[in-house]
Image 1 (cartoon, rainbow, N blue to C red):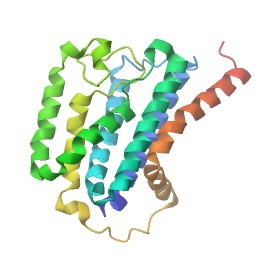
Image 2: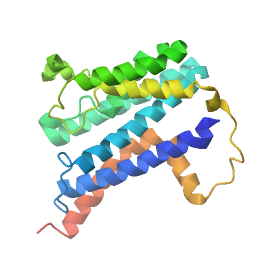
Image 3: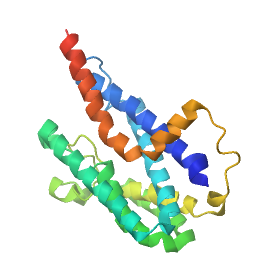
Image 4: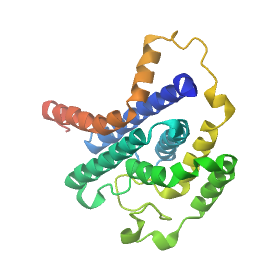
Length: 234
């Protein structure tokens, strides 16, 4: 299956890049580095690449999970919802007004609810995805007020630690769904057991992406807090 051959590796790679990115972000937050995470082209492009990889592979995964029992699909949706609420609660306690109210997990939850019924459109997912990308680039200025953009539609990034607007990102998800329903996605993997230890580690991370997404920042923050206690910033 494509999931064995590529999907877990791709998600594992995205997890590795995310941890590295957030490690640099946290180093700046604690004063051990001075990266321009919000203004530098390098950092903003790297973040966009990470989110694109996550969302695209999530679209493939959504397509491949269409045959899963309804109970399993509901459980996954529940896990995403709980994860999103945890992110909102923790970031509200830590960052106050800059709390995350529509981040990546919030996007996944809403996009999954919207997109799962569209799997029957099959070939139409390609033009729909491209259209969503184009429309998303225009922005929706009317949604910029915070009391409106909580649903994930805004022309400009609001004052929050993370924001994954429904447009254009749902277009990336639909392109992933279109990819996941193609004939090549069900071809068997050749010799799937012959992989190195690092490769198996990356695949393991890909299979446990949600829990790693939730725990990596608390772990990083703990490490930096201990580091600051032992080696305070001068």
